[in-house]
Amino acid sequence: MIKDITLGQYFPGGSLLHRIDPRMKILVAMLFIIMVFSATTVYTLAAVTVLTFLLPLIGRIPFKTVMKSILPLKWIILIMLILYLFAGAKEGDRILWQWQWHFIHIAFSVEGIAKAVCLSVRIVVLVLSTSVILSYTTSPIALADAIERLLAPLNRIKVPVHDFAMMITIALRFIPILIEETDKIMSAQASRGADFYTGNLVKRSKALIPVFIPLFVSSVRHADELATAMECRCYRGGRGRTRMKKLTYTAVDYAVFALTALLLFAVIIAADHAGGFAYL
Amino acid sequence: MKKYKNKGVSDKPSVAKETALESDAKPSVAKETALESDAKPSVAKETALESDECIIRAQSLYYEYSAGTPFSKKAVDGVSFSIKRNRITGIIGHTGSGKSTLLQMLNGLLVPMSGDVLLDSESIFRDKKTLRQARFRVGLVFQYPEYQLFEETVRKDISFGPANLGLSEEETEKRVSFACGFTGLDEQLLDKSPFDLSGGQKRRVAIAGIIAMKPDVLILDEPASGLDSAGRRVVFDGLVNYKNSTGAAVVVVSHSMEDMAKYADEVIVMAQGRMIASGSVNEVFSDRKMLTENSLEAPVISIFADELRDRLAARGIDFPKGIYTVEAALSAITALLGKEGMH
Ligand SMILES: Nc1ncnc2c1ncn2[C@@H]1O[C@H](COP(=O)(O)OP(=O)(O)O)[C@@H](O)[C@H]1O
Ligand SMILES: [Mg+2]
Image 1 (cartoon, rainbow over the protein chains, first blue to last red):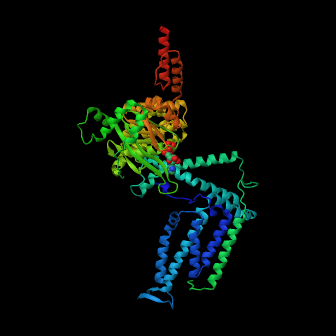
Image 2: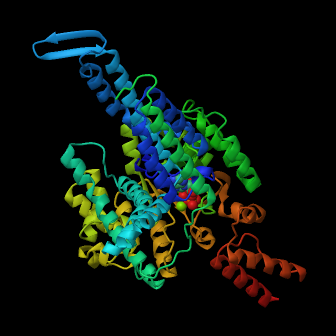
């Protein structure tokens, strides 16, 4: 049932990727995104692709799991392939096959195919690298924490960064609990003969009332209990609050950052002196 | 919906039974023959009776959570047993031993990855119809069922199940008072909001919601947890009454060995997803070694009775065996005092 949906794909582990400071990981992910967009030649894109496929190895994430996150992209890629294959030909391209009818012009060209393939690879690489760096190897809580720290300067202009981060953290924390609870309530109502899967839309929506009301009641109860528990421990918002887990950059973090920056630099230079042919 | 090989199912449980006590050897043989009794109706009377009694049968059930992922967790592993009509069957076992998972397979909420559940000798997973029928005939009360209440009034909430059964309003109304009778709910509460009741009352409303469906098999997952002793008694007395007046089979998970000794006829012991023993209260609770090995304990009164028996034996006085309830201890001691007084 519902519990089969994977939400938050954190994969606990102790690899190098897991140990990097989450703030640094956000920065590294940004560099990676820039790198993917700077790789405007076939060779550089190939290099970035190889690098990306090394990431799951470094993070010790099973390849099958990673592939699952790319699978939903298949439709986007398919639509793009079709668009580029048919409409990507420009003046002077090496046309392989074409067909014209009034103003509809369909043409396969070598350049069009190359562009379509490269763009698809780029999307896959983009999703793969960011999800391995940020979601498979970083716990959502660490991520929220890192975002809070990175956005801390906004406190100066009175943006309540801490409160937002706390809200995100709590919301993330409650997602699995609520999923489990939904599942339990659905099972309980199903054993009273509720039927969620047959009938028209109206009937099926109505069938969800016995699920939503208890779920709503228990969410309010959870919120209430949590608020009490937080107040009992003297939580009063972010001001003057210290942390148990202080994030500190280590030499490894700096080294990883430097390496990524260096790679980015190399990609930019290599793309500029385009050997092979530039596709964009 | 899959049917897996079920041959040789009965060796594991029957081994477990043999360890429980010798006296069970006969019925367990009878049960094995009952398996074939569908094909050959001319088996001895005893076996026929046996298969009549049995209403639901679990056959080497296997269930694993998150199967195929690195987080996979074996919850139930090769469990077989049969539940008899007009009996209260208790299930005991440490937290995480797979009791709740097991119960959810019995009414088809979870589909076992292998094994089968037979309701009146027919697989409940055969098709949609048998599955839906099993939902109605096997009523499952979840743990903390009060969190599933949702209607405006208690009456409407208890009517939810009967209404899903497609019963008329009149019949539904009858079922509501029927259910209230067994759960000790005051009819005055019926027009209140379920959210205004006390914890114990909510629990009873939720149990009434299942009883109102008149299930042939009533299954309850820790129905008394978190209740005070008066609340526990009301719940368990209600179960006994329901069983006596309808002849239904009642299956109940509980951590209270006292309640099990007092109310259950048969006991199934689970540990780490496996059924490690089953038999009468006497058989299971007399196997102290098996219980302690699985972090369970016999009822305190039976430990007391054993201690008393040892001390009296030292003085040459006989004290009966097999005492698991306060009532039994009381009558044994009274009898003893009466005898001693005659001397
Ligand atoms: N929804 C679930 N997802 C994953 N594992 C579960 C789930 N429910 C139970 N388990 C695991 O299955 C095992 C058996 O659980 P359960 O049937 O609830 O045992 P019990 O009711 O005896 O405490 C436990 O180890 C538990 O952690
Ligand atoms: Mg349980």
